[in-house]
Structures are given as C-alpha cells and as structure tokens.
Length: 111
Image 1 (tube, rainbow, N blue to C red):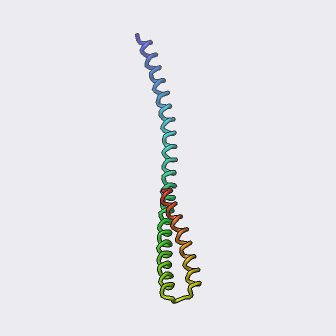
Image 2 (image 1 turned 90 degrees about the vertical axis):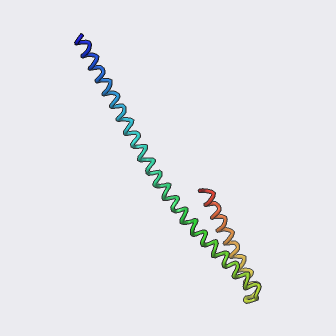
Image 3 (image 1 turned 180 degrees about the vertical axis):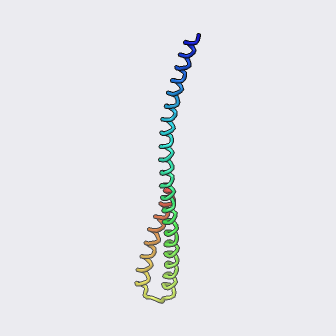
C-alpha cells in the first residue's frame, strides 16, 4: 500500500540523514586527527634535523679534540714545550674529548 511505502521511504530518508550526519562528524574528527599528526610529524622532523646538526657539530668537535691530542702528544714527545704545560693542555683536551664523545653517544642512543 502507498501510505506504508511512503512512510517507509520517509523513515529510510531520515535514517540516511542520520547516517550522513554521523559520517560527517566522524570525518571532521578524522581531519582534526590528521592535522594533529601532520603537525607532530613536522615537529619531529624539525627535532631530527636539529639533532643531526648537533651530531655533526659534535663529530667535528671530537675530531678537533683528537687532532689536538695527537699534536700535544707529539709536542710532549719532542720536548717543544715544558712537560707541565703540555700535560695540562693534554688533560684539558682529553677531558673535552671524553665529554663530547659521551654527548655524541647519548644523541645516537636517543635516536
């Protein structure tokens, strides 16, 4: 019968409207989550770039400290400077080298 069919169709339209509204709401929530994830990704990429830059700087500083250590050891062996002066400078450079090496190791572990 026509009235029953029309009523059924009207109910179906209402059900579809409710479903559409629900999907639209979920879509908005999903878009907000996607925006947050994209922002988190940008932040993580920036942090990674900063860590890589620091790691590169530390690698250069460690290499410089190693070169200075070798130079000071050579001076010590050849007697170019007083033993006390060279030993003091060597101790300072080795301490710096150890500190920078530990920091570089921590950066690599944090990755």
